[in-house]
Length: 373
Ligand SMILES: NC(=O)c1ccc[n+]([C@@H]2O[C@H](COP(=O)([O-])OP(=O)(O)OC[C@H]3O[C@@H](n4cnc5c(N)ncnc54)[C@H](O)[C@@H]3O)[C@@H](O)[C@H]2O)c1
Ligand SMILES: [Zn+2]
Image 1 (cartoon, rainbow, N blue to C red):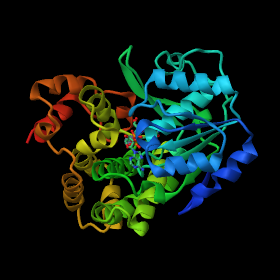
Image 2: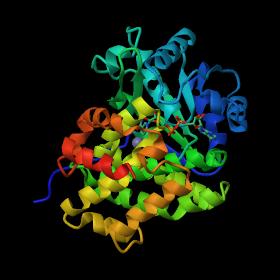
Image 3: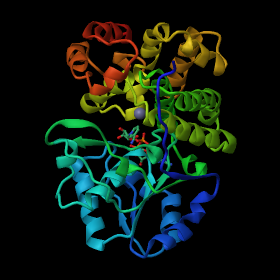
């Protein structure tokens, strides 16, 4: 008998070139007090200024670091409380979206810091300020997931927290906002989306609707990522990448990620690898480890994406990293071999338990041995 499963997606999605123009009408329906969130990078870009003009009178907050910190969330929640915001609009990559998701919830509590929920494990209730998520990278899928990945630097704890209250009210996905992404960020975020598709698919909790979305997301990424490397404003391929990142977000948000994401946390924490770069780093090893334990499902995935074999798919992933300027070896990444023991030790995040093959320290040592050259 087939195992039981469920599916939900409580986020309204508007997708397509030009949908950003709808922001004026959307915020007008929510109220007058608007907080617009970005980061230092996106705040300099023309589309951010355009969004601000379209919204009109609003409070702007751009103090969000890549891999947002507990302090970033606390500061934004303070602003949301101070202006008694009716709605928050987050324009940026996963860092901006995650910071806003957590702050919209924190602002409705009595707690001064998100640390209580992140590091100390308290659960958020249902109250939150409505959030409009406008992604400007094609990667994390954060616009449709119930997760926020936060870094508590003081306590040395970085990782995802989950709450159904994090789902944005609306995801406004305009692929034109991704045209300005430089090559390396295009590569890292695109391969993050591919990691979500593959991890959602091989997760022990995978289910049929998410499987379909995962395969289609991966097919689109293999087809479109090389095109946007060569032609960053290619409308069709940028749109395909934004759609693929959305599909991949929906594909992992219920099954959840597995070993690739578990291993990414110490790579990002210790060696400041951007999230997508860290996921891409171990993706081929995980693919070859997991495929033989999946009853032919991974071969079917590869065939759907146009490959004859897992080996061929794996070689194409490596090329996508090389051509996108991402590291493929410990040496490329500037990681001394002496650090491997610590990386292995810190990789055992609970997401590791979703992996179809049980992962031991020995397997991870073997992985880093192969990644040394
Ligand atoms: N919530 C989730 O479900 C989820 C899933 C995966 C990853 N994440 C988290 O998301 C974060 C990573 O997000 P990301 O990969 O989107 O990167 P990011 O948000 O950290 O942005 C990376 C850089 O790209 C710049 N940038 C963003 N859009 C741009 C554009 N259109 N043009 C030029 N520059 C642009 C930003 O200013 C920043 O400097 C990590 O903290 C990761 O852990 C969250
Ligand atoms: Zn990811």
